[in-house]
Image (cartoon, protein in one colour):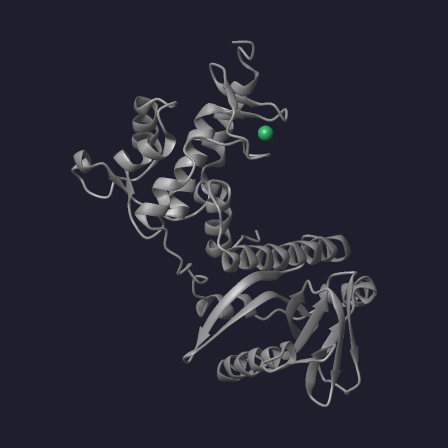
Length: 328
Ligand SMILES: [Zn+2]
């Protein structure tokens, strides 16, 4: 599953409850745009190649001191494709070894970054005697953006309309390939993706809007029924899940600290029962110390869907409550 970065989660969580600085808003839009491009490519990839084709998404790899990040890695015959997905708008030009947009020339451009990744992967595969070719694929996923190449490049560069044809071409190869354990090798050197370096100060936290907001539209005016919260936009959410989601949201915002019971109760505000919050913490979260009296729980700094992704069955039981007594 492709996940948003912690940085994007952090910015998104703050943004629902208070203002972002100009720099933060720009980063938020840039990361969101990047993620949307990756998701769009994933959809095309699944459409043409199906789910059975092996690939790795969002790989951060460290090998012999070099760190790189790759949007998608997949194999075709004896070639490993390293895909960089660019959700750019505008007319880019590549000539004389430089990427240009209008009169702007980029110093450390996407082609050079791709080549660096390829060098690191080549070294890794050679060291392990894995006889696979490595090929960069740079994908311009936005139909409002394109790149024109004036240089002859060894990299595969695809504009939006070229993507389906290219994926169909590799579809015919992917099945009959000889198997090498390339995924295991990569995973061996995979490191967790970058944690955000942004910190929310106590003062900023105090100024953020308190309470539970609608998962869909962000509104804080929710109508409470026995088992659910209902929003004017029509969205209905199980109460227990809304509490869990909000605790995780606090965890994202304050990712640098343990979850602290008293702080979380403040984050919910007076409208919400502190007993219910306490019960939710003790039922679903891991205490930091054996002595639970200090009210501190482990903070993974992840949004609800990622934090609880392995507890689907337990949460499905809760989902059933949506249909019970919905008129309370
Ligand atoms: Zn809503």
